[in-house]
Length: 498
Image 1 (spheres, rainbow, N blue to C red):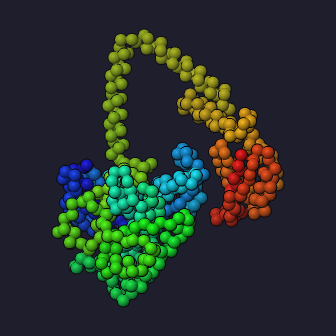
Image 2: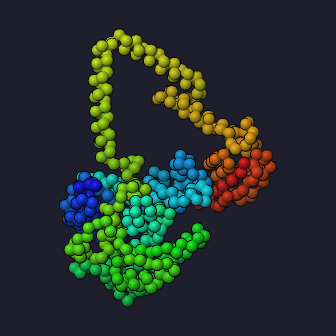
Image 3: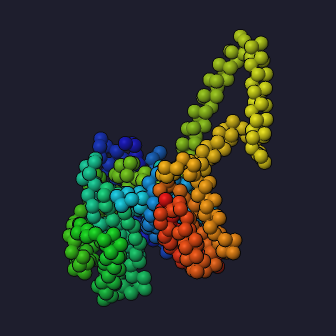
């Protein structure tokens, strides 16, 4: 465990941060602060204000953003191979969002593999949000190891019973502007839904700085607003149960600055009639609680900050946006140091070898150059239109592997049946008069899935009837056919069973 740790949560139009000191196996709050902001674009300035007030400096830092900063998509893929998921998932996500591919970064959780294929929860965040966050943190010499969704650490803190076992349940986090539902199921987060709280400002909740408590500028509207929120929560859960076709009479836990208010909690318990049990349980049991510190703030305002600090790294790594172009700066520095040390060692060894075996070295160098020239010649002769050559041997191996994949045999007993033959049969059975563009072809040795775009629904039916006549396919089904949102025409998906 790090000697000190800074935990920062940016959610519900508020930045809350605390510095923790490790003492044996416990964490103690050393200093903390919180401040609100109006527009989501104002959060970097608010982060700077809170960090100034805390005067933080720590080698370890964790950050969590509220669900309102993310997009969530539930996606099903008809296979479970990790490499296939990694290659196909970006296309599936792009089909389900209106952002350009270069505008967002995503991570995902595997939520279920029990019914065949893989069910995923994809989490997307705009790149400019991550960039703004890292910029303001970098100005205070903070380089977070984790950037995740704020409720995930609380879920694992609440539902993890021991090192191996995680209970199932719902966590309802309620703030003054936003609420979120989290479903923990089979040891992983299966659902995250963000809901507005009092969108019309009927009750107009706020935090009273002088009297650390939750307040409302229109107290007479509070119960009506909470009833509307409970109705939205119930609709979400009922819809989920209808989709999964299973009954989940599991416990509920409530957190957040409003969820921790006794009056709000009592009203939620009265209106949330889902047949489940609402339990009292705080998501920071591993923290040594300094009552004198928490008494200065409204109850629940540091729930997610404490959970983020105490949550094991293995749980936080499931969704972490310190990846790709936002990989940690510290890791790159360490890598460069290792490379420099290794390069220096190799250089010394090379100089020693050259000094003793100069003649042999020259001969070997000539032989190496000759062999490299032959490899380049073989590559150019073998691969037509080869283009730029960087590593001919590696590039040639890639081409060989691609050819193996193209001609790999499926489940048929006929040794001559391969992907090329199947594609040829599909092409011959679809006349040129069909106005169709194939965009994706997925072959998993049992089925073929074809996605594409055509002019109307009749063409989709005609393609199905044409492919039904093929001797290679036992069944041809139309998985989906919908009017394309971005293009003129009909977007379709066909499933061909071998």
